[in-house]
Each structure stands twice: as structure tokens, then as C-alpha cells.
Image (cartoon, rainbow, N blue to C red; front, side, top):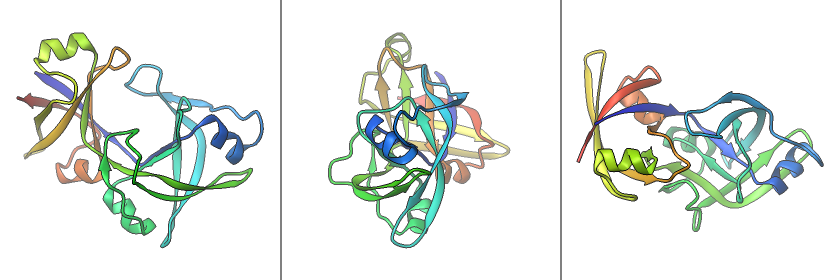
Length: 188
């Protein structure tokens, strides 16, 4: 089965409480661009992510979430001076923290910085068609511009809220010389 492989650049998900601390009381996220996952969008709002060695400006993805998290590549981690575990989004226990700075204030996160584990989003019908189940591990082969690479340890995430798409971070995308979005082949 073919799957669209997208490059997911570093970004931040914020809780309602942290959004107000960073942008002021009553702040709301501004949809700049819809993303491939239903209801998800890149926001006009950005924050400065500050680590022990450096800082980076990062976009926020909406809508708000129950808990704030920062998703970065391992190259970003070196620049910031943090050591994030490779985790699925939302699995934040035992992760490192950082400081987030917005126009109205800053917050110190005790946890929440991860390097996102490569994954494929499926709705239940797509998962059935592909012959996969939630949390199953597969491989995905990509070929672009004379460079072939097979990503192993790709976790399948199945939910009625999802649409078929694989996400890799910028380091993984660069390793395969991907231009941003390409088709890949799921290998069971």
C-alpha cells in the first residue's frame, strides 16, 4: 500500500493555560494553514523555545491540547542543548523540559520535549485496507531523485480522527533527500 510521507518540522503544541500565559488572557490560535490531519493547522503564532545552549523560534500547531509539548529533531536538540527521548506524541512522562517565551510572558516546562517517533496516521478503514492495527510496527520504503531509503520502526496510529499520512522529522527527511512530500510503500 502507498502512503504519503510528509516532513514534519519542529513545532509546539500548547495547552489553553499555556497559550494565555504566552500570548495573554483570552488569546486564541490563528489558523495560517490546514494540515493533512483533519482539524489540525499551522498557526500564525510562534514561540521562542529556549534550552541550556540556545534558542529557536517555532510555530505552534493547533488546536490546543491538554498538555504542552515541543517536537524537535535530534539536530535541533543539539542546538538547544537538550536530550529528548524518541517518543510518540503525547507520551511525555520522563521527558526533558525547556522554556517557552511568547510576547506576553514565558513558561518553564518541567517536561514535554520529544523527538517524535516516525509514524503513520490511519483511520480505521485505511488501517483495515493496509492490514495493520494500532501500534503495529511496519517499514516504509521511499525513493526520490535516485536515492532509496527504507524507514524501519514506523508505528501505526489508528483513530477515526486521522487521515492516511506518514510523518518523519527533518533529519529523517534529509537523510532520504525528500523534497517535503513523497509517496512511500508500506512493508509489513
